[in-house]
Image 1 (cartoon, rainbow, N blue to C red):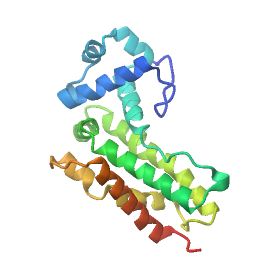
Image 2: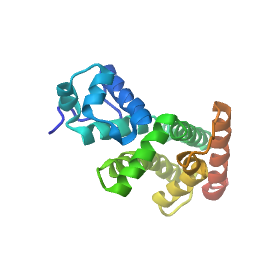
Image 3: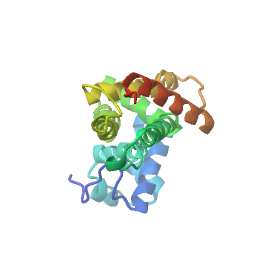
Image 4: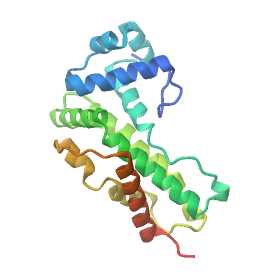
Length: 211
């Protein structure tokens, strides 16, 4: 079934739709892959007909949920025409901090665990949905900043995807895999800010152009 509205990158959502997607995230934490349209409708206090109208089907609902979660990770606001080292550093640190906050949340841990299980069992499409609308979509949000910084003479690299992977690795380190495997790892806001600044500094040492 085709959804009535196109929801991309978490944009264009009404407050009611956001409430539904937050309900999906809560249910994923509690029930894992047992989530159904019926349980979502019950938790969100809406009808299944409304869910089908908004999101199409279960895969459409999960896709919107992943996009809603991933939309919290952005490169910030910057002026391409006036991009300098300070603005670049602030944008990278903001992106890194937002990503660390998202991946260390209980909702993201639960979502990723279900996605991995789903991918291994080949029972559904959640693994592919998370990959396309999570990791790949986030990369497409940051690469324009990296390319703008290269054009401004602030960064030097041959391939934006490789540069992004490097930054992604510096930010995430082993945090996500430890969380997925059950490590009790709690990141405070101060620790996230510190780690984001450290990853950004390391990235700029690797790719930054010395003036």
